[in-house]
Length: 321
Image (cartoon, rainbow, N blue to C red; front, side, top):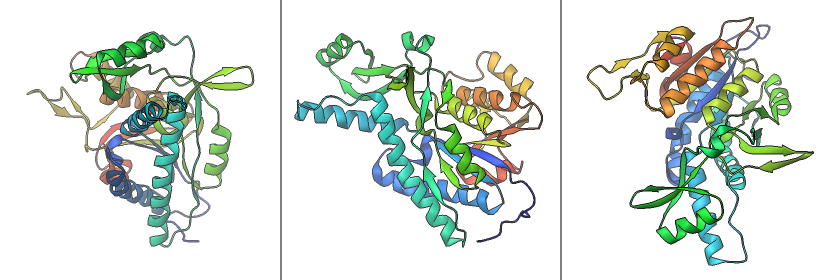
């Protein structure tokens, strides 16, 4: 087995790597192309002596799957529309398949043998979470008024968009990762694990049964919980930008470099620094992870996929310490 740059007797640092949607593109050919960049970033971390645990977005993919399954049910009426939880599971398998194969190939090309696997991951949500009455995630195809009325008759939420209507899905907070023991066992064996894709499959516990919820969990929030459960040393949020910026798109726009948790909290509290959405979600997840450490220093880095290792080394990116 290839030796890494760290000595065997030194405990390797665990790094949770949260891949953004730019790592996959919007189509099957784009995903095949883009996952190579993500695989290079993960292999760089392995080669530098870290243990990466990979999680990822599934935004365009789950929408594509949900649209395809809905259309199939229209063509074949005996088949019902696939629940969102099933679409989430499909997206985890489909994305994980491409990722694990590309990471495996990149490692082998460097002379490194490491098993790589994807764990279909279920995440418990609270049925009384306020998000279920205030949905925020727009998904799926554009519908006409008649189709939108039919969705509302089923109890689903719709919103007007793009000259028509689209479904809008709740985004509850993650409460518990059910497969965490399996993930931990593989990480402790220094294998490469892909887990909690798309924020995990949202489920509610009913006795001994887990029932899928019609929701999409914020992936960065689940990534932070995963990192905390694994007692990771660092988190990497990989996007298309080298730095987060405050007051983006205004004359006062400014890169955010290394900051403390207190400074990050202040940036979120001040109006106009971030719009509600991806940047704010990443900052909130980074704060949760870093602030929850009790007996060791942690850091979270937000940077581009190409700069993953450089960001972890403190040479670039937005760093929360």
